[in-house]
Amino acid sequence: MDSTVSCCVKTHPATPERCGLTASEASRFLLPMKAVESASDATEEAVPEWKQVCIDIYAQCKEQDWTGSCYDCFRYCEGQQEWPVDKCRRRKGE
Image 1 (cartoon, rainbow, N blue to C red):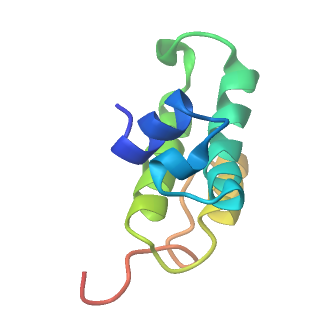
Image 2 (cartoon, rainbow, N blue to C red):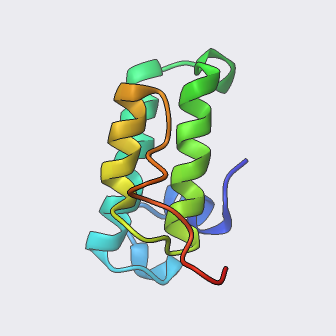
């Protein structure tokens, strides 16, 4: 299930300002999605469960402005098959 921002960026990849993003923000947001799409190049059912968890947590990280680099943590999650909670997590008080 796509977030509103994710859906908007996918719908308007050439005009990120329509989604309230700058070009660099949109590119950082799209990189993991493009990597997943090109790696699997299949339906969502073909994505391994652990990878879908990484994708879902990455989306939460970006949308909720967690601490740490969401993209770096996504890449770590792809390699280790677990999210690095010590590096990327919700901000205190949330």
